[in-house]
Image: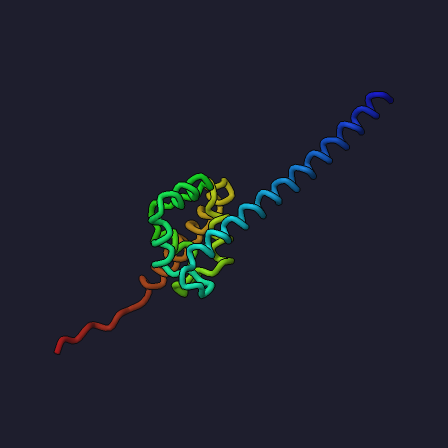
Length: 146
């Protein structure tokens, strides 16, 4: 009976510890996102609510900013490439795109990220092979030179 009570209390404490850890992680993520939004607004010199490549490159010329991002585990060596990753394709980065993109880029790739990339590469290779197979079966008319 004593062992069962001890085990019950231990499991309750462990469950409580896990809940506290989750709450702390969420608070940390919220603080980090808030700092990123502050950074975004400082970089948005046109104050139009979006970052252009020029605004992004300009703020990343500041060594203190580069160091801060580096401490946040964001690699800023290739600013144009980083901007393209954050941009949805319209040439501007919104606050949401910026925060979500930086949060995803923070740190090293997880095994889940690597597996996702491997899956996409495998699918892409199959698609290319399928296209190649279809092209092999198409007869082309001879090109007539004029």
